Length: 313
Image (cartoon, rainbow, N blue to C red; front, side, top):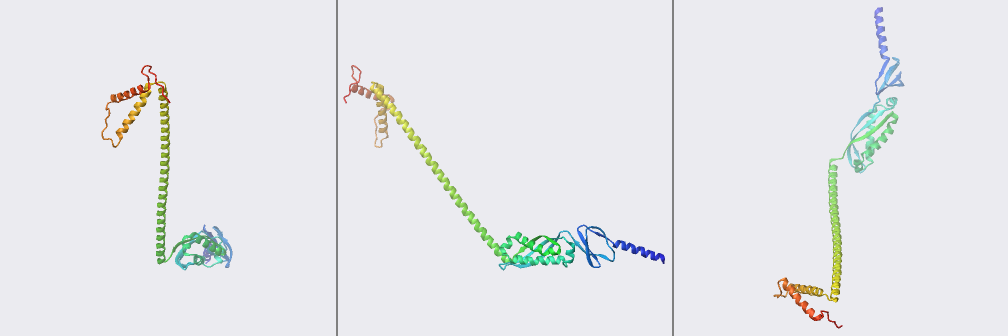
């Protein structure tokens, strides 16, 4: 009997020893209760407690947790019904508050998120709702973070996953978007035509300016050429006149031959000339010039002295 009692005592001692050892895993925190009253929080590691007097109250996950928000219907400020869902990221910072300040923390966070989603979306128009998700997320985060602070919980992020308007509203939005795109396409096309017309007009303007400048330059060059030609003719006339005054017969031959060739050119180019009698060989032309020169010499020079006669003024 003594042996049986000893075995029972040893077994009981082993059970008490093992029940007094508590190992807290990393990422968790345990609340310790003394006769049902919270005394302290056990952090990750090995802890010794008093069996039968102290016990583990609640095991709290201290890691960041993702909570899915179920889909629900919400009414916008312009009375449009939308189907919306989301997710919430939160982390417990104080285990004792999360254990004793709220009952069923997950359910409380889910209902709080659903309520605030309906409140925020009810204060916005549908267009604003669809185009400003970041604004919605920021407002939800601010509201939920303040509401969960007494629970020892930090809400890190709130994300709206999907916003689905009714099908008829989606069809209307599709038609509106198509009309808007058609409008933009027509505007862009008109702008392209306008830009092309402007560029074409500018090109024609530059071409006209260049053409005018070309004509101006050509006129200037032509006038300069005529001026130089006139100067050359004047100079040649002056030289011939000086030669004539000095009694040079070749100068007189030059003037007669020049006028004779010009006269032949005019006779040949006349429209009413049907038949022209004129020498066809260069020797005949020279002979004609020589004959005219002899007539000129007889009229203006003395045969005896070969000096030009005095011309009475």
